Length: 414
Image 1 (cartoon, rainbow, N blue to C red):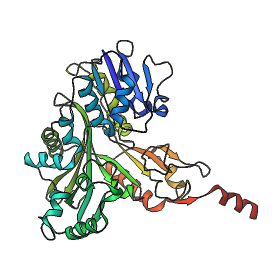
Image 2: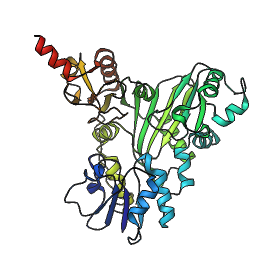
Image 3: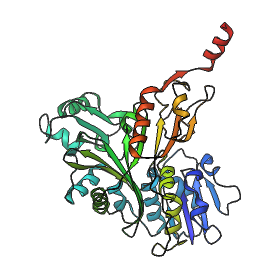
Image 4: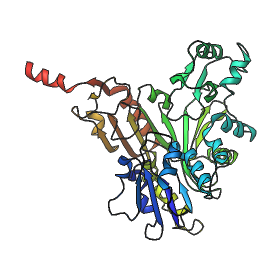
């Protein structure tokens, strides 16, 4: 089989060689130079660099122009799903098309499908509809969220005290980043802890699944505060709700990352993606279940294993969590971390990744351990003690902007 991969996520995360038999298949990777460089140097494959400066679909199609026909196009990053569908359509390759993927990327289409299945969602409208409704015209009046239809990582998401305040802000200042209004929606803010459920479906059957609860929020992380999550029990209610949400948006053969709000009167759908979860979700999932989601998914969809007869690793019931401190809101390329010593030495720490004072952090939003001031994994342990560890760490550890010149100046003064 000839396989084309839109290569964005590092090989360290995906483990392509573990999932795809590169001796049996002809695999072509198209990606930016820095991403291609993460592939093992001895991997039997074709590597084609794209500029990463223009339209993704056009760059990929230009890269493979003149090559023999492909049998499969794979795109594992949420940022590449639409482009992957467009490449399939242009090349005549079987698989998901843009209309299939829209319920996984467009939040209005997504919530409309989930609501039509009888599941609770926050009340919502496209921004265009909301503006046409005028002041007092929305079916809710309290706290209101403005967010992009296809957003990720809570970028350009804003919360306003009332629905009218949200619409007034848009009328006065427009939408963030000078984007188009028809690329946004508004929805009521629903209060409650946020859970995420991660796993994999093959032909509608769950192959592996794990539930977690956030400590902090993704929006808070985007605004500069730490975030983590802790694995929790997958109750029958949560399992049933997960299956119904996935069916509502027609996710049947895919990895998935599903988020919901634990409201006082039950679960409320927040969003779903046909992808693996970010930060250290993949690693904590593997620690708890023995299943590495991206590579096992590739193995199943490329024929390297039969889902019906596959023997799955069994976890021992231990639970894990992850944490991350953002660096993009520091206002500096370097940071100083204080108050972490007691937490770093805790027996609950499975992995600790801390940026030295003389090593820069990325100024763009990222969850990658290699980009941010501080990250790690905790466990094994029970959910309550892992939750306490994260909350105590978040309230005690300080990450402040810093420059190496400050250290040099202090040493000179001494």
